[in-house]
Image (cartoon, rainbow, N blue to C red; front, side):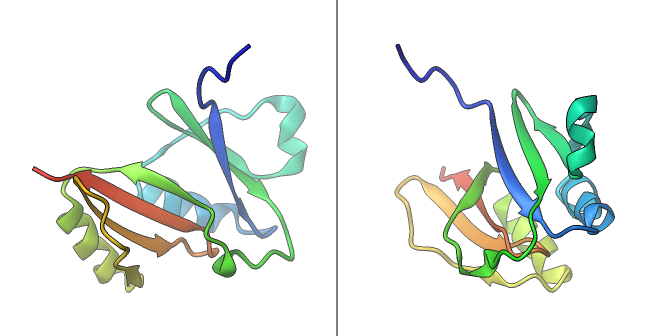
Length: 122
């Protein structure tokens, strides 16, 4: 018996914000929307793919996401370009404590979910 792989992660948004979330996750971050199973569509939200992993964007009301340390960490290239892109959109960047071997930063999506970007140091 073993835990064999990570299948997906879930972030949540308030009801009625799917279009804004798709603009952020698909438009700004460039993630690809994938078909959500028919039997789950009534719950709202949408699914994304990133390589072999999935990000499920679900609906959850009355949650204070801004006070949570829970987050998704994306490995990126050109972290300084991402830093500028975030600034251009006036998204507040948090300079996190260093991790050996990585440049990193974090920020909140428009719904308060924490997102971390990491790039391996050269």
